[in-house]
Length: 602
Image (cartoon, rainbow, N blue to C red; front, top):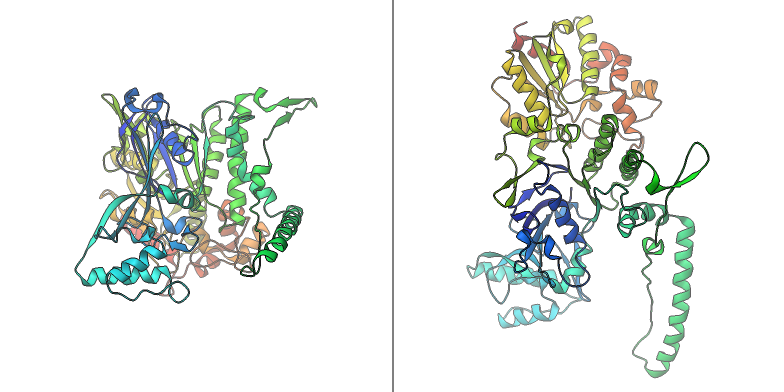
C-alpha cells in the first residue's frame, strides 16, 4: 500500500480537500457532480503533469486563472519499489536514513501548477533547524565537505567515508549544539526526475465507455501487460543482449581512437537502457464473435467492454501473486460498476481487493453498494459540496448510517427468524463456521446448538454493511456476537488494523467478541484435508497465508479459500480440534463457542 495520503487545493471542485488518508482499497462516494472524480484526476495530473505549459483554466477551482493548483501526495517508503535515490553522479541517498521524509516518516511531495506552467515541485522534509544545513539530504559531497570544514569537523572524501556518514556527523554536531529539527517544504525540482523513479506506476481507468482503446491513455493502462509479457521473455532478453553487444562494439571503436589521444582513460563501457514498453507503440483490440466476424473493440456493447476491465484486474491480481516483490501500481478507476451486472461487480471488487492485499493501491469513485459496503469505514472518503467548494470527509466526520442509506446498503433479510446472531466476515466464513459448530456440537464438544444461532456475513468487520447490520440487530432487540480474523503477520504478533479497531470500538450492545489467535480461518486447516479436497499440496503456518511445500507463494490459494467449509467437513471434529489448539492445549473453536453460549445465556 504505497499511497498514504492526498491533498488537493484549487483543483476542480476543491478549494482545499485537507489531507485525506488512503487505504489499500479506497472508495470515494458521494452524490452526482460533487467532485469525486477530481481526486482521481488530481493524481493523474501529479503523476503525468503537462509536458508544456500549465493547466487548462477549466481545471482550476472556480475557473480562476489567477489561482495555482497544489497536489500533495504522500507515500510510505517501505512500500515503494526502492528507497534509494541517485541525487547526482556521486550521491545516492536512502529516503528514510538520509531523512528525505516528513515528521511522520512519509515521503511527501507537492506539485504546484498555474495556467501557464508548472510552478514548483517540492518535498516536505524534517531535518536540522539550521539554515546552512537544511536539508542535508539534498547536499552533494562538495557541499557536505565544506559544511564539515566550516565547523572544524573531520572532512573525508568519498572512498573512505560515505556521504551518509558525513550527514550523520553534521546532525550529531547540531544535536550537541542544542539545535532542534525543522519541518519545511523544499524545492526539489532539480531531483524531481530521480525521485519520481522511486514511485509506483499510476494507471487511470476513466469513465469513458471505450476505455480509450486506440487512444494514448490506453497504452498507459496496458503497459503492465507489455512489461510482464516481454521483460522476462528469454527471446526478448536475447535481443537485449544482442543490442548491448552491438552498441558496445561501436563504442569500442570510439574508445580505440580516444586511447591514441590519452592514457588516463582505461575503458569505456556503454550500458543501454532498453524499455520494451516504449517499443510497443500501440495496441489495437478486436473481438471475434460467434459468427466468426472480427469486430473492433469500440463497437462492442458497453457491458462487454466493462467485463474486459473485470478480466484485466483479475489478471493483474493473479500475476502479482507470482511476483510479490515486483512493481507496485496505483490503480484509479472511475465508477467501476457502470454497465456491470451485480455478479460481475462482485468479481471486480474481489480482484481489486486482492490487488490491495498484494501491496498495490486502489482508488475508485462509486455509487454502488457492492463496492462501498465491504470497505473499512476508515478507508471511505465521502465527498460533499458546501457552498461553491467540495469537501472530502472521513471518520470521525461522517455518519456511517447516512452514507449506507445514501448508497442503499441494507442489513440481510436473513435476520428474520433468529434471536441469536454471530457475525462473521464473509460468505465463506459463514459456511466454515457452520460446519465447525455442527461437528463440535455433534461430538459433544460444545453445548451451543447450531439450530439456535445464525451465522451472518457482514462483508468485513467495521465496514458500512457491518454498521448497518448491527444497528438493525440492535433496533430489533436481537442478541449478537462477532468472530473476526486477527490478521496477525506472525504468531503472537499485534492485531491487524481492522481487528484492532474492532477491539477498541466494539459496541456495548455486542454480547461477545472473539478475535482469532491466528491470521484467518485458513490457518486452522489440515494440509492433508486440503490435499484431499482440492488436490493442492501446501504448508499451513499459524500466521500468514498457506504456502507451497518450499515456503513460496501459493498461486492457487484462492481455491483453498473457496473450499474452506468442504475442507472442515473432511477434517471432522477430531481434525478441527487438533488443528485449533491454543497455547494451553485446548481447542480455540471449542472455547469460543462455549463462551458465546454463556454470553447468550443458552
